Image 1 (cartoon, rainbow, N blue to C red):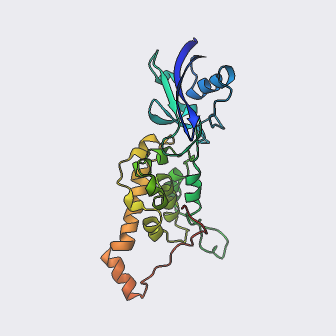
Image 2: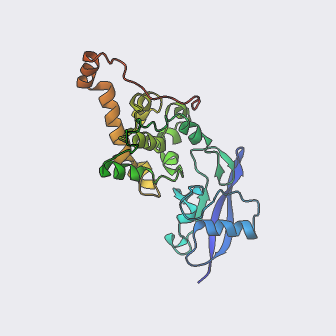
Image 3: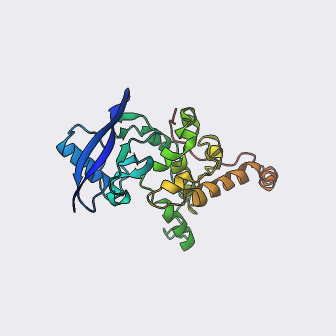
Length: 262
């Protein structure tokens, strides 16, 4: 059964903006993105909203809905109480381009600084081999759709713009962990995770885990284990003594791509 939904949608650009009231007819079973599309089609053809797959797999339609970071295509209108006004605003951590579209290029600049997968040479028979437990451990990390909701809620960059050059954020700590835990990878990214990515600034509040639409345990399965590896690399006295004994004062570091986030 259809009904009229009351919405407040943020309209504006980098210079400023405000919430605009809309009343839009919707149908049972629809999602917030459906309502936004209907506003575009019938009331405000110039409403800017980013989307692509409408199936919760591209991460494009990230917004803040009633104050909570969500995917607009995966937020059913039945989530809200009858008669409740649904407020849609752009991601707060990133600069507004127009309306609900934000400039998330910071994340792509950070991605360029993460050293790529560097496997060991193939064995004589040409076949790489991995234990099943190693395959399963990395599988969770590869579910990331890069919606950047975790980046949006991370208070280290959400509330402190000045931290961005020195802090990669949870999405990329996930990437560091995925590569570092891969048994065939030869790069050592632990020093980079500490010095370039700023993993020490994360105080594991788990807000990133709470908003992940793929249910990835970012904090428990990626950030904390990565912190432990960084601490072992930098502060463990046994590791330090081993480097001295074997004259490995400088362990091989990852090959860093040219360019980094400024």
